[in-house]
Length: 370
View 1: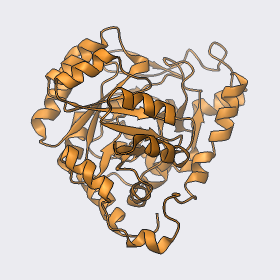
View 2: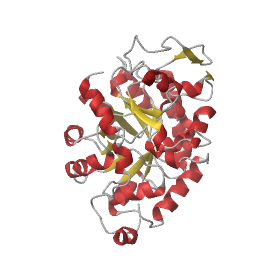
View 3: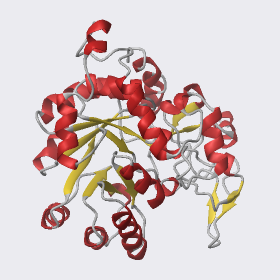
């Protein structure tokens, strides 16, 4: 691992936990924070733009969050999400059509540009043709051709950003909203700083364009904190994985429910299939083996050839692989890369998505300190 990369991980492994103890810079007096009614004016503007009941977005989360969860979240009045990176044209059309038919609410389809296939424009057009109303990109900036296709379909465009510079690039491409991610997030972490280190500068650059706060948010107080800091909405990933409509494997969900923020690690351990990417995952046997061996690079990691699990189609999940784990997986799921953000502290049960959305908003409105 390059020295700069290791320094990054060491610096940021604890920054998320520290951020949680620091209030947003916009309002300092707790009594003033409690006096502000929810939703904020900025949140109301975004809710009107998308026809949302609540300023809550589901984060796309690979195979763990499929059509059923997106439908449930959207029907509850929040923004559902579909992760479409790596999907075939048939899967894209089927998933998007299924959600479009089952809900009148908005939902977003997400593409990870770092993992884009050669036919990315064709895949995007398949999603748009099936009725995707919102398209979101992460880990890269879309080409002008992709943006033009979205505009031609009259869909909304969102982009994940992590700095003033990436926010400016996204705005120059015409983004309708930005997703500001912090290192507190679970899964594929594009960010290099904590959410509340980055959010103020992204808000300043965005001006009137809505900014969604993402990373480490798992309850209503976290949503309230993000809105008070100036965000138009909050995006939650880990918390939605632990719902009854999620397609996540039961072992994965159990691990989330019994874990805490201190059990997560920000690491390059699980980089098989995505070299040099950082992920926040639950500390497990695979990570402990790798860490005990001195964090060796690919080709020198212990148990590297181990097959941990198999899918119904016969495909295998190898140790150190970056994959999402749905309920059909058979094998040692608990040793796979179990994505989890610092918000895992707030995952203590397995509600329906509708129950969760209502609970989150009641907590947000409670006017307790963020």
